[in-house]
Amino acid sequence: MAKSDPFTPTPADRFTFGLWTVGNPGRDPFGEAVRPRLAPAEIVDLLGEAGGVYGVNFHDNDLIPIDASPQETAQIKKSFAAALRRNKIKAPMATTNLFGDPVFKDGAFTSNDAEVRAYAIQKTMNAMKLGKEFGAKTYVFWGGREGAESDATKDPVVAVERFREAIDFLCDYSISEKMGYQFAFEAKPNEPRGDIFFSVTGSYLALIPSLKHPDMCGVNPEFAHETMAGLNFVHHVAQALEMGKLFHIDLNDQVMGRFDQDYRFGSNSYKAAFFLVKLLSDYGYKGMKHFDSHAYRQADRKDVIAFARGSMRTFKILESKVERFNKDRKIQSLLNKIHRENAKLGKLTKSFSKANAKALLAADLNRVKLARKPLPYEELDQLVFDLLMGVR
Image (cartoon, rainbow, N blue to C red):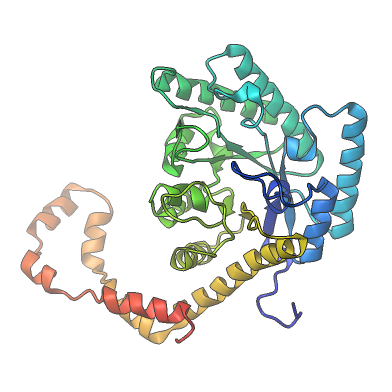
């Protein structure tokens, strides 16, 4: 990719990938791996070859196998650290695999077994230390097994209580060890469980105020997760932004109603991807932009690099489209017609007082006249299409 290309990423863009994303060997429930499994250091080198990558994120067992010996652990850490230095790549986020091992077959923090719950917290404590060793500042929690197939098996109220207790404990642990983490919760409606607790981003936004340390807790929404349930991902991210709780974000793509596909960002949902980038750009999101996606199963190493480059390039292209949208005279003219402010009424409704309530009750607001005001949404939406298709 030519250096003069305006869509060439740089570390300043804060694009990140996971060891589990570009390192995915292409295995699925119906077929074995089609690419060789790469060591963590080799994955970092691949991202270095892709160019422009800011960081690489990891689950504890992406980096260190769950049964690794102390000697193996030390060697892996040494090789990984050398690869990070060699490629000038950071490790800004870490997380714990609380879903892969058989011990978590019925959950981790919400398991019905007290010993499993204790092990899950212990495993997370060790994983937090591992993340901090490589400079991670954000710690993500995805409760992939925190759920049920039958409501006869778990009390969902107790499950919420157990999850809260675990997070409160781990917040205190981070504070006591001066780790400086911010915690980010990732929601998903289903898969691999029949139903997962905290199924949408709003579920976690509702939980956070009840935590012992709400200020250090936010969310990590993933595009595919709300989308697979037929919901509008942009709206969920907007709520997190408005609340100051968007600590991290996972970018990928998804066909509505399908299994969790983890497609390359923007590969399917052009319009939704555009409005997501617009939201993040317009509201000045400065956090990491993490591509939690996988190359197609048909991809070889060269095509995996193309996948990584394409993920970043798509975001950059959509950023340029956002800039054009915000400067387009016709689009902005329509928006000005649509967004009709009234300073006098706005002052009345902004905050309650008896005087404001009295004035509002006396205001001349004719519903018939209001209903006649035009809203040229069709024209506006077509202009968005023209812009995205490159004919505007």
